[in-house]
Length: 69
Image 1 (cartoon, rainbow, N blue to C red):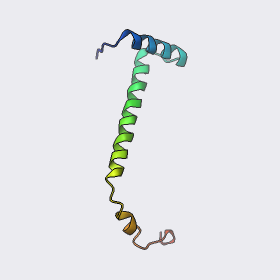
Image 2: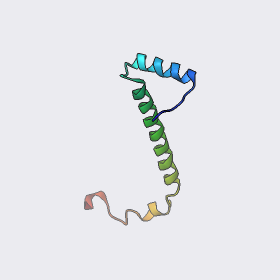
Image 3: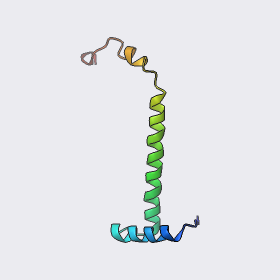
Image 4: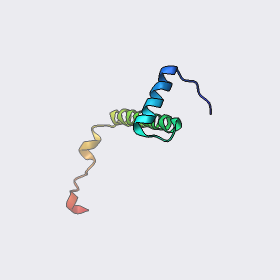
């Protein structure tokens, strides 16, 4: 894979790589992409949480206490 990025990002990647002692620029980009993926996943969970029916919380326990388990 080949990507083109702006010069200011190249400078940032090099600086980050040196300050964090990363083995390569690719390692820096992989870390950044993992963080983006994590952020997207967190947003997806947040959106899914909004879809939960709050009325379900009333009946979810169905009268069972922790001691039952």
